Image 1 (cartoon, rainbow, N blue to C red):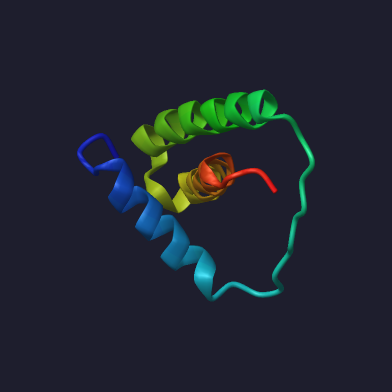
Image 2: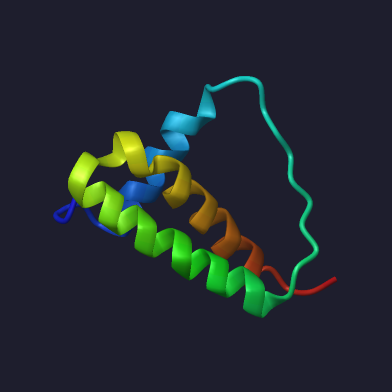
Length: 77
């Protein structure tokens, strides 16, 4: 999906995931560096897979990368 902006990909991934059940909650305690590196890997995989197969295949990586970005943006406790 080379022509779809990342913000739209994030919205699409969130919409796909929103109604799926059962739900899983993750509580991670990893370094900011590890979270950033994991996000970067997931984004790279999502871009590659998205170009070949579209959002239908890449949405889990897009969704998790977005959640990691949100966690990195939150102020520490």
